[in-house]
Image (cartoon, rainbow, N blue to C red; front, top):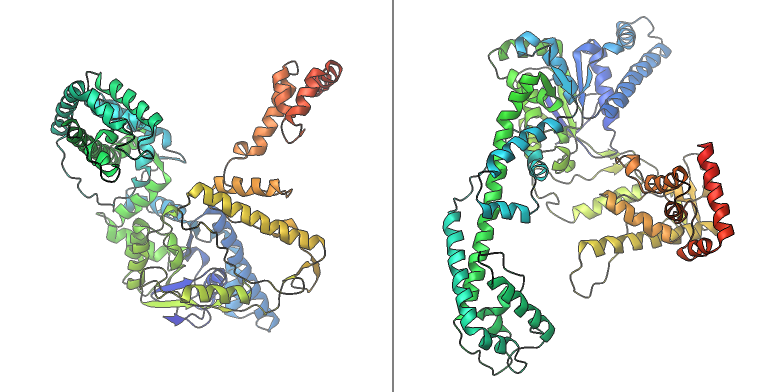
Length: 632
């Protein structure tokens, strides 16, 4: 892999540029774009630029235009005012509203519309941003057809697993629009036979319990025979009650959690030293019933998986039919339609038209691509000398939740004619760059695949501390070990521990800053004290964000949560709703008390109770809410 130089790289063929965060990816794209205009003499409408979000598209559009403006000014300042290059730059700037800069969906839509005859695209199709309602309608139909004819035991299992048409759709939603997926066949299961075996054995256990109950109860209650920690008297009494209730039923229901305590395996493993378990045919019969129950549960789980596969296949065929009937399309359909078009009857003509329209291509954030997207670009541009640059960070190709597919990236990497990497980080402090390099270089294949090696980068920033604590630069990377004494710790507890540790460290550094011990210096060497707004905490979920925010609040530190969630789902919105409900209903004492408990009023339970007992004070308070109501 070669080091990339945007000023000298050949503008031809399929090129892959691997760029870590902060290594000047956008600068590189802008430089290539400028060279395509100046050296290849391409009009902006013939240079295809694709990125993956609307916000990124608008930002990139501004950066590319500014690069053309800067290049034109530089050349004029150098005395090249009337040269062909300056004229081409001027034309590119003036016609920049024609620039072909799109999201992936925008490009597909443009290609399908501009070449509708070749692609078979229909003009009278309405684009819909959300197809969830239509999907749910299809799933509801599927549910009615399949569940109405399902056996009662499977229907009971679905109810037990809290399966609904909504949850069923959610379980397969991520599989839709991915024709490249291949489903492995599930093993065939004779559920009727499994269910019958379980029911027959259940009747056998019923019979044996009726015959041997007295002796069995005496055994499981024996303090001399069994380990008291495993067979506690209170627990045993409950198990006996559950056993009686279970075996009085006519049908074979689900076993209770501790049913296996009446089996030979559990009993023998709980015997005190030197003791022998009295022989009862009930013990092995219970073990067999547990085994058969597990087989039934496994079979039901396979049935559910088969149901999901059937639903996925049904949606793949039925959803397009309904969209065609309604004359609507979703944005992901654009990708599939273009892929079908570049492999369809008019593929040769369409590809030729697209190549003439887009004589060069710059594909940004390529690590987020999937097989459909890559197939479209590869089919259109492979086999030509037209310059195509795929730019992305392979280390982020592991994020499948974002649509990325690591194997698609590797396929593209092997197909590229030239591979480059950007080796200088222009954003991060040298100490942080060095720390990250050392961390990942300790492992031979930190990203599992040999084709995705860790390539260390250099730091472009000067090695001057921008943050000092007690006049010393802090370590760029710190490990915090949590002592668990070798015991397992669950995710919820670990999340709280991480939040508490983070909040403690933030509180500590802010306290030091208030004492003049922590300072920040900007690029102009201006020094100021660190404040809370200078600190960011990165989390993976809304729940984690709430946990750290609560930990900070407990230490008297205010924070702002940035989220993609609606503002109406925030804690502040709920708090405000409670206050507004009280203002809207000023005669409702319960709503007023609820409003007083919010952080807006910050009353404790004791303070609210005292107000309620003081008639004059409460009346004055309700008058205030009435006044607010009238103003509202």
